[in-house]
Length: 324
Image (cartoon, rainbow, N blue to C red; front, side):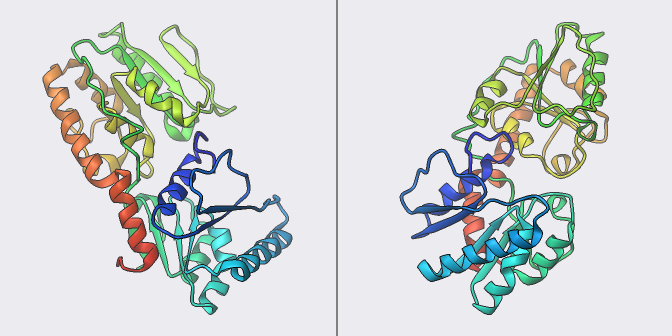
């Protein structure tokens, strides 16, 4: 529930949006929020102890029983916690309380399979974010607030600043990103790369003068960081990462091999090119060509991933008026 958490801030945004549509929102969370924006949001803190499976489950069931006694909910929405959904869903089924699970990750734990079977519906961002085949699943996009990630015009006549935001480890393709920028510097020696995010201990990176490595930053700092760059580079091949949408909304052209991005957005040159070739193609492009690309991608992002339309779709799933 921390709106500035580098990776979990979306939970706070979801609660805020739901509070504007429901009379009362009761949240069970492991960490108390620093502040609560809405008077109809009530937070219950429930510590989840690693390894204490039975006691964790019992505490969750008892907390759920207290909520039922105080003010029985009409809907239950579980965000990215399939183990919680798996524990609560037998009770919600018996009590006929509609239960929806949000899950967006490539992993497929047993708890997710149980929760998928027992909950009424599952909602996820994109097909790559939910790998279990089920007729219950609805895909609704990422849900990024464009008022936070504002579009800004850039001068693409001489690109110098290239940005990557996200966890830094080998699975995210960080070595490939560094190599791609290094290769392009032979022809474009003024370009620099900034890596922003938590760095894995097993990732070894040289630190030439053109490479800036920053740690994780509060989410509120990201718009400024995006605005100081001219290109966003990304090498993760899994599901559609929300940082790709944030970059597009702020007006950045994207270099990536993420297939879900390439299925819906545009890049300079062939989408099948590796990121090194894509980057070189982009750097060689005329500024008006890049501006046209940015405009097309911005329109796609707003239509499919902007928070207002996203919460409408989520609301319909929670209420049961949306079909898979």
